[in-house]
Image (cartoon, rainbow, N blue to C red; front, side):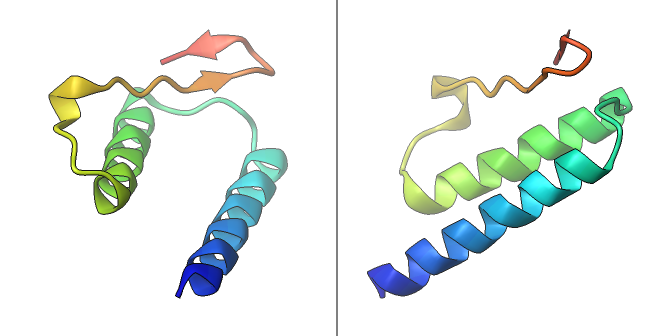
Length: 67
């Protein structure tokens, strides 16, 4: 089971990397909110922690835009 999770993690990471490299690093505030929610949903799959106990920051390095 662990090997399957690691494989899924690598695939997801690679897909995100390809998406980020192929598209401009600017996005609408609504998109950033949705992205943070999706990341939070993923974190909650692996850890039993309340969303108010952590903060997600996304930094788009190309433009140094912080959300």
